[in-house]
Image (cartoon, rainbow over all chains, first blue to last red):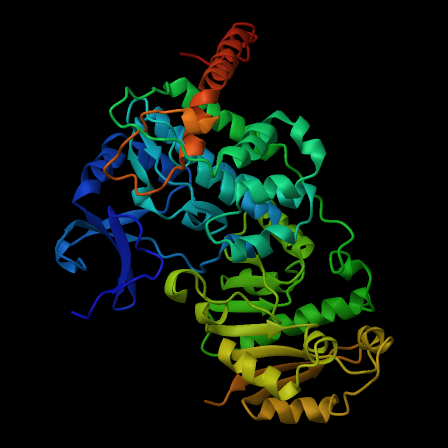
Amino acid sequence: MTEPVRLGASFRDPSGFVFSRTGELLRQVNRPALEDLEELHKSGLYDELVGAHLLIPHERVDLSLAASPEATAVLRPEHVATISYPYEWCFSQWQDAALVTLDIHRRALAKGMALKDASAFNIQFHRGNPVLIDTLSLERYREGVPWVAYRQFCRHFLAPLALQAFVDPRLSAMLMNASLDGIPLDLASRLLPKKTRWMPGLLIHVHMHGKVENQSASVDTAKPKPKLVKTALLGLVDSLDKVIRNLHWEPKGTEWGDYYSDNNYTDAAMAEKHRLVDSMIDSISPEPTTLWDLGANTGEFSRVASAKGIRTVAWDIDPAAVELAYRAVRESGEVNLLPLRQDLMNPSPNLGWAERERDSFLSRGPVDAMMALALIHHLAIANNVPLIDIASYFSRVARWAIVEWVPKEDSQVKRLLASREDVFDGYHEAGFESAFATEFETIRKESIPGTSRILYLVRRCR
Amino acid sequence: MLDHLTIGLPHSAIAYLDGGTGSMILQIAMAGLLSAGYVIKTRWQHFKSFFVRKSDRQDG
């Protein structure tokens, strides 16, 4: 049996941890958590949460697979196709994750259990739904005890959402990236506009909470403990639920949100591009099971892949585009498409303790295939990345790539060059082909009729 | 204000998370309000259910 490797993020909870062994992800349950796990099943909470697609299902496996002697049980959770982090989520994804967390806690309380933490990193998007992946977050309810996860919930969910709704959609991702354990409430309080102090929910849970968050009182463990009745806990969940639901953000007017209604593609050309992308995906052999669409905008072409049952991620820099893509996924109930935010010029890095808690963008790949449609000019022209470096980067993402060549005659490139000097002597079809030939072999090359653009299907040489 | 407040805080063997003293106090302070709010909400919903039309009422 191979050596178990504990996951970089799984060290805080003495109840157990997650580790991998021969490519399989397992969760070890230690002594203190065994009764909680048994109660989870006995109370019917496990069946209820799994049935409602709120908790990742697991099966119990042999104890001999444990990573260390403290284990009293080993679980094998269902595999999550793509791990994502809150700083990669759009507003609605984050909001849905918040509501799912509260829903789980509420249902748990009804069955004599409770969530002992409320980290946004415990929620993952699995087959279209936000689900709790940390099964050991559920513990038996202890009479009278306040909700220990209240502060974490406000930092990981409420504050970031309020900042997106009232300040700027880009803010939360930036702050969460830098402040991994949620956004400090005093900071959120200071950044939110004054009018939010007149909203009862935000007044209590962010502004007042921000003032007391860092204060400490002398704690006397001999004194009688004040008890919090269950109705107060349920009232707290209701209050937070109401505040979260009343937060809104409409994706309007950001640079790419209106892209598809404002470009030089005729309907016929769009239909042709769809047909070609579809056909090129079919040419990939063996059939791809995973695909990343880089610069996917609202996921229009990502859908061509996901409709074939390919587990697809639609990455885009624009929060509005990701928001629209996610709303469409939610509406149609698609299970194979996950839209996420990513800036390819500054992708998610390794973060957290020992730089191993949250994985970088590239390290969550490679995938079988990738697409770079209407993207190359943004990297090469807008961001000055040499074509050869782009080819090299793409070769690290996937073995197969569908790349759209966008020449200088194209109106989008003209727009990019309108206000700057054209220093891109190497930016032409031959230059593109020779740059990509360093890493890839061209399998198919097709012009998109009605445009000056060309689609390439390439396969990595190595 | 909080410097002079001494309270007994919950102790748990498995609650690895630092709930934050200030956050716990805020919860306790708001407990009455939150509890009342919840009770009122559930009583109101219970009260409303008596006025559901017979045709809308679920059996058993």
